[in-house]
Image 1 (cartoon, helix red, strand yellow):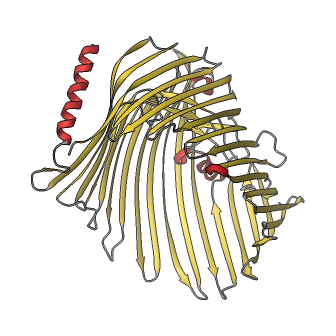
Image 2 (spheres, rainbow, N blue to C red; image 1 turned 90 degrees about the vertical axis):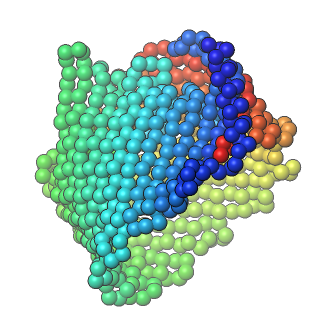
Image 3 (cartoon, rainbow, N blue to C red; image 1 turned 180 degrees about the vertical axis):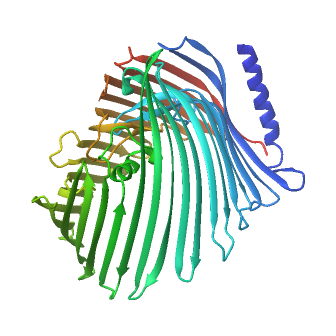
Length: 614
């Protein structure tokens, strides 16, 4: 087998060299033009680990590109990107395994009023991530494919029409386990715009279908599946008004349903249904009587708060398990405000809003007043700021004063460039009148140019948010990073940590905003750290290495302690179109709810050659 692989590799390289000597662009007939090239990789590789038998031998990889057109680039044009056995050990691909696949796009009639496109992608044996709402993520390996088609009719003087359809599916397992993470998606949409008698009109219709399978340790004691489908349609209108004003109105109606099923044993399962239908109407009018003064009025009505909030939590509007504000929930608001620009740097605004809402079986009315002051000119050449004060009541004899403040810092001190930001909010109105949110965020950055062309920078970011006086709803994250670079050398390091809640939703794991009434969520906390180094010891040679480790805990029906480590090193040397390459990769992933950690090590030594076929 090794001899056969060697012969195939040499044959491909010889054929490619012959093709490279031909003309730079190939003509098939009189109207078809093609350009094609590819990077061939040939060498010796090996891999061993807990979850795979030890193997080594000759290896051939390919990363190609084909593009061309028929008759004219504005008539039909196309691109294709085939690749074979590409991994982080032997190429620039970020896959831990030897991924193979193809993706391509064809555009047609782009120079007419009826343009369209078709796209396709397929990948096999590639690694990806199953993402939680914070750091870190879990590594998966599997395959996926997708297809999409779009077409438009853009005839002057007539309503525009755009139609699109796409579908895709993927199946994978958590690396080193038999835990499945599968999904499939089908999307269909129609959009139209039209301008008549000063009105700008638009309308749309969307339909989606989403199916997902979640890993056992996240979903409980058995395999969990969710099948969801839904659609929404709406329309809107805009028109100019006197006093340099404008007006718009929109209407949207959405519906969706989901079926959650968990297989506990071969003949035992549980299921649950979740659905919603909601309509939302919004209107707004604004006026600019002078260059400095602006005032506006707005109105909004939603006939199902549960459905409205669900759309902001789920992917593509699919319902999320565990959110229910009770039957008959609705929201109606009416408000107005004005803004005045006192100077080029100082502006102020005021707003008043009246609420009427019903949820959790009780009706509420209330209002809030807010005032904002914004000063954009730097004070003492360092600070800019904005601040808001909010006075609210909920009609139940409860009043609250809220505050929002932002401060920005900029300062150059000698060769040091520094900047920072701090934001704080307390008792800010959420989408439900009896709940307020609080948060604060901060960041700092420093940059320094040193002698010998060396630059150094460091950054720090953090945020904390949650519902006021509502335990279990908060999220927090912080990150630190630093880097130093010079002409032939660079190094970087980072650290991050986060904790909060996530939800299982159709299409993956959802990071929710702070929303009352959530249940069935996943509590997580985790941290990650790592760094990298890159050296160019001589012209056209690069040696690089990186390391990262992520540690997390997830608390759902099943508790789990998780650990992921990746070490990667690579050497590249380029001489014209020929390159020498060597790579080493070690990967470890452990999930305590599933079993012992899985370890994999791979290496590669070989050469690369770019060929222009035609």
